[in-house]
Length: 393
Ligand code: BEZ
Image 1 (cartoon, rainbow, N blue to C red):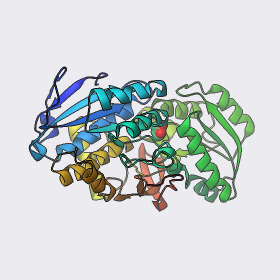
Image 2 (image 1 turned 30 degrees about the vertical axis):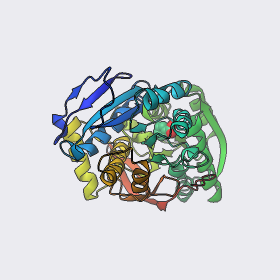
Image 3 (image 1 turned 90 degrees about the vertical axis):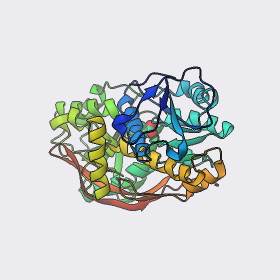
Image 4 (image 1 turned 180 degrees about the horizontal axis):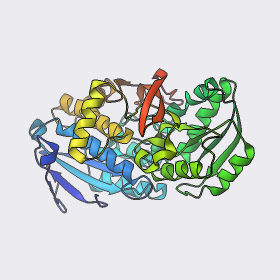
């Protein structure tokens, strides 16, 4: 795992296994280098997500081979700890002190909002590989900020309709109380009510708390038709296990945005079987690109890829478009931005294009956990575009 502010140097690569890292502490700017900053969580409940993003990103870059455009690649990292209170300082460190050409960050919506405020001042190029804060590609959109993941509005938009189609009209929604969960809930409510459902109760726990006993007791006494939720990472493991252990799984089916079962199925084990979610990716997607990606990821990291690895990989593919357009010179910002705006990404999730607000227009799948795999059981929404309210790009 990488430490806060650790500086790294990547000499030319033809295979990820051959990557070598040297410390660059104290080095001045080298114009023959492409400087890439990771502002990601490397500790806390989202630590695994941050690492998967970095791994996926590096896998994409390794496809460029040795010395892309005659340059070396320097990596800079900051552990943002999923802590919004430190976001401004951390963004300033990576954008101003380390003076990177592009920032790949971050996971947590609250941290992303602080980071974007700094990016709007510095003009730094940013690719968001996860955080779904609606405003990032809505009211706070900016020409220098792109996202390769989703807006929080997107994954739960189709979920309510699917739950009603499966016979559930009275639902409880459970989430951590912070931007991502609240936006997921708002979007779920919109779709669920439009389909004739009723959210009978909203239940919250503070982020990143995992003490779920009180809300599980309340769910048991409310007796809804089903429960929908937003949790991810370590919190998703604990919630799914506690839900099953409380004896609710067989009587009140559990649904969620797909983060609930992404990258955590092994840890959740039997307790995740049968959970239905909606997401823009699933391990079980059978397209050729996904099969090749998963094989390459497994070979490079001895681990299974997940949605976070895919979003990091796609951030790498997007950056490659900018590097190709500028022959590796990201100081040609207008050209880099124009290449990314016109990008069509041949992704393991299926190909997607960038919206005018710089957010993916992409398919969402209905996913069901079967035999320890996130299996695609249908397309929940084809080509879903975030409304991008307040963005005037
Ligand atoms: C978010 O904070 O935006 C987020 C974190 C983990 C998974 C999905 C969204």
